[in-house]
Image (cartoon, rainbow, N blue to C red; front, side, top):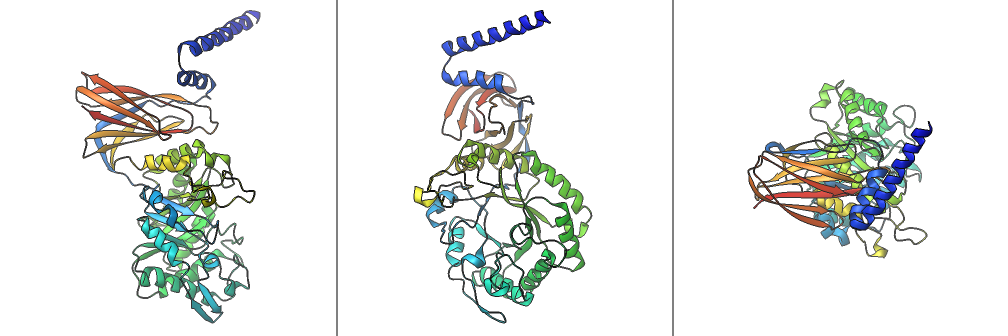
Length: 468
């Protein structure tokens, strides 16, 4: 026992000496590598192989969707249009349309509608190149005796509200392929159930009838239930109910806030099992995560690289499984105590602080640079996730990487092996989303080429391989 203790002590002393030596002969950047190497938890490190000749087809890009919550009824996207447009969003989701924008007026049985306060938000969304994704929330006060999360006293009124909303956006405004989501987090906002007196299925039934009554409209999609997490019983209940009542159901939606990015794939595996029971829906149904992030509460990670790495790693894992995933949210609300950074979910600070972009914004921008021709990539690890693409115009190969560590202590020097390359000279450009970049010149006489890319904990990187 004493010999083992003595041997262990000698090893520790050697490692301390090695650390001191390294601090003398290498720069601070390499020293961080050593520190993180010895501090990392157990897991499998990445060994990336990119098969440059194996083009698998095009990506679906679930990350090209954004959401804004009910931070402020005076909020406008317009000041951020150039920055948001740079992310190439396909859809932008908004909720609170009835309690924020005073659309519904009059009294029960004698309703009128005014969309003048909603239309500017719709205009802002269109200006980014995206289309609106409308959560049909919350209940107009005239319908529910002043309770915005209550059930309508008369469901016929609710049908008219949904009908007129769709007729305005998909008809008068003439916007094609708008998505309408029935409610937002019904299990939380209003304590709806999929059974009993306050039944979400009743809400969906009358929403579908209202949608069916809409006239003079372009094609649109309707779905739900937009629950706070993936709850199998909710999804089964809605699917069965829609089939039994011949209701329009174009997509299933839920929210997912989780530190574990594997959870997104696990949800989809479970969802596929559920939907196999309903072949009538399975072939055409879309799957949407209409809010997602690492924490549903305020969390300092939303102001740092933590959220940036989580978002990109999660998005990588969603490719090929999720149709649309809406990063929540675009901009912070205002902190009651007046702080600029307060762990809010936004990719931009509040407008009182000049709407500064946070790390997650730059990471999403880097993510969307990946070319649309997907190249086979193997060797992802426990922390480092990656995608590869081919730029048809330049013939360059691109690799996007995210090193996400929930414990924020794992750095990794990632080997990247490009297979099936032509012999010759190459330029490799390595970039981090924080603005750092490195260029390497390398030559090979073989059909493969290897480089390394050191990725600090919770970082996002982009590698471009170009033949000289």
